[in-house]
Image (tube, rainbow, N blue to C red):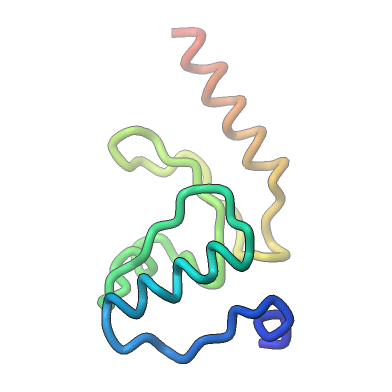
Length: 96
């Protein structure tokens, strides 16, 4: 939690969906996240399906098939591995 305090993204648990969206937006802004962020519902269905906690990187195919799933982060994943998976997919599509 110390990093959350340092980064200014320490919030109490949201009580409703509007608050959940507000917290997510604040995190995106304060952390300078430059890619699309999605907010899971209160049932945490996406987190349960993709084991995204604490964080992971995924490469998804059209239709939702998982092409690459990193180890849990922030220390268990490496952007260069995702870059290799992306390049491999691009190469496979170019060969078709």
